[in-house]
Image (cartoon, helix red, strand yellow):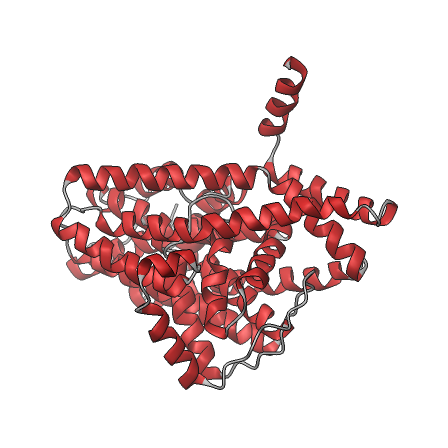
Length: 417
């Protein structure tokens, strides 16, 4: 027993990125050496099944708990921060749509997809969206109807914010933490699940699948770079009427770099708080906006959800027109706000977006599995983009008020040391 305990302890201490990489390599090697050992794919089936079971509960609890928590009275800077968070998240999703249209991506999935039926157009998408929203919440949860889950979670969360007691809010916060912990346990076993998924995929499709995944990673990383180095600087420049890159690069260096390795926006909150203090921001402001940003400022998550959903649609031969893609951008932006703070949390919201196009849950969860395979790069980049943006736009809102009051911007923003 002591030997097993030591092995488990060493496993848990090892980097998740390293373990996932080992799982990928092991799956490929097993597919080449023992392709007939079909029992290995069971690990992938169990992993996907566990994610499929916990994902609806996770979305419901996280969104409800987040919305019902009370907040202190804040000035107009807070409203501007919220606006910037939501605007950039939507623009990130829209960027992902444009990149997906310019460079269509496809996936290699292990299971046949004959059951997917494409919608007839935007009217059917809107109809399905509205009907899914009003479904009984218990039915929505049991059938993994993510649109219904999200809608009812918003309604209940806002209602509890008005009438709920402090005990209720604490209970929901504890429940949210507990569900997130279960997700962490499942993700801790991701290397075994990924090994099974890679084994099954390589056995059925050969090694050429990795060229497809490579293109997918390039598309995801490209969108994230455009968002962080082009879109966000333009918004900051228009707001503050100055060169945005001193702020952008400082946030990427002092927040994004740390977040890249921690792969958790929540874990990076102390780093962001310390950076806000160095930037001279008001503590009463950033002590609220930074934790909030770790929940709703999800540019990278919106990109991931959009790219992966459109890749699934392309794989199934579903044609997506521009108006429908814009709706997907809105859904991805709103859904990203409910992404879990754990590594790979945004991937669990892909089925919600996939449901817009009638993509079956089993296929959608395979897409989530693909996301975990490429997560070594995707999730690190996503977290770096999200976390650095938390500080970037908190500072933008603060400095905007400085401008209006006639106060000078910090020296580093004016090219001074």
